[in-house]
Length: 466
Image (tube, rainbow, N blue to C red; front, side, top):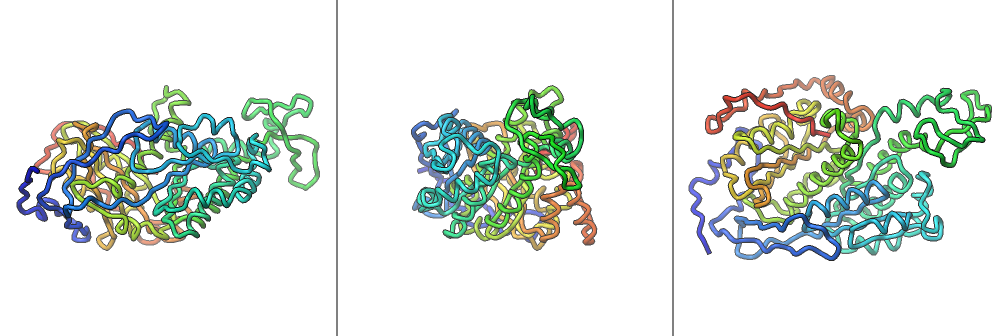
């Protein structure tokens, strides 16, 4: 066993903020961690070889983490996570549609509402999704048994995702598992179009049974005028999506410990104008994957700085709506740039100052240095409230040689800020400022470290904070 001599480790890892409680579990045994082989049907891109500095000779005890994809959007996100090689968790795919389930790569597919929907899906009706989950409540509860932490991922606005996800969350939370929802919110332009309830562009002839909004032929429903008189026209069920998404998110929020909502509008800020639509939605799946991986890696993978499940639970238990930021860089100033990408996005300047809990993870190749870990920590703590409870993990993954990835979860906001964050994320900044919070976002120039000079122009930070 090789011995890694670390002198003045506490000084090396100390940050500019006195609030950061580094968990001194670092010692001198440098032990390769056993690689977990891919499970049946799992598609791993590359094998992971991880190394750690742990606090004892015994291996780190792993919490049981399960990722549950609910509905089509959730199933797609799970497939993406499996394809990206996310390890240390068990994957489940829940759906009413048997055809969609057959496309899942999860090792544990679960059909719900078999009697209600007969395997044909919900037709975009969240009520059917909820009823299907209620019908299969016992099977869902059995699947979740033995969990310590449950991630529930879904796309809000559809039938199964919007209707069933809150039921799954309720089952998990009532069983005492740390329950985290990671969901996507529809594009706002979908809502604007669909809010024009009496607009002629959405009126379709019953004979044609064709929707001018989603441009597909599908079942329609009667829709009354504002005066309450049925005017005899119909609209496509796609009309329901945006309003149902908000209602589903509100229900989900009541049944999870932490809720991370990824607004698809942010994809418009980070995607190239020529990005194909399919690739844009894959980007949303990648963000979901990084959020889940960032948290699960902290818990399951012993790293340069170790954090156990109890640490994460202390911050994320009953914390309400959270924000997710991700960043990555392979430049000479990669630590600084990755941290800035994860923190200096549109809302982070105010929201991180309002947070009472922050969890972040740093992942790099075998070439990552303690100084780079320190740089990332300085960026985060310089923006955070001095009284915030902050924990982090640092993991070595040889797939990322030459790169540094930073994932940050910000939690513990006031209820009014959380409500505004869900319904009007851009307005959340105003709510925060109205409380007297002064923004002190540090510019990239002021964050430069003497050990990591930034004389060359910095690339713009991607708006990856959701």
